[in-house]
Length: 195
Image 1 (cartoon, rainbow, N blue to C red):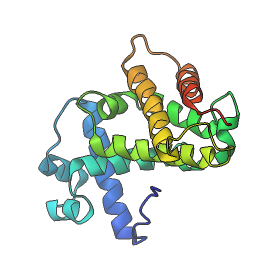
Image 2: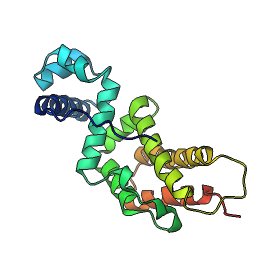
Image 3: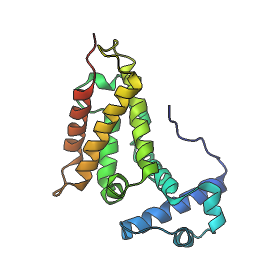
Image 4: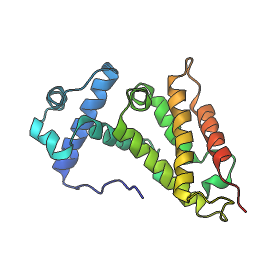
């Protein structure tokens, strides 16, 4: 099960990470297709290169953390999806909040979920979705399938990611509530029937 790293509560560490995250998101908003060099990033953040490497292996890891922090700050924490969420026909509030967060940061998520995307951020999102789906599937009676729960959950998370990846590319842009409905419908169709 994937959980956010506890991380140090040292104010200097939190401040350095926040400065780096803010700088990266600012650069990407200004130049969405740009390749971000660590030197440019640290200069914008007002920290040195060694500070970057104390916290991150690469820019992609920083991007994943920055998006996580913004999602949680916007009340869009996928870890708060209740385990019984798959019993309803409507997307749970936490999932809808996450899709609204994506809509508010569409330029960034086009980069993350698009063809030249962010493997670290996409994998983190996929794992969170898998965790939420596994928790929900475990509350249901065993399905009439031999497929392991984790495999089913991975397939369902893939359906959600597929819908979200397509949605961020659509022109004209479709409202978040409608996209969340599409994604939820896709995942509910993929949910195994109980015996």
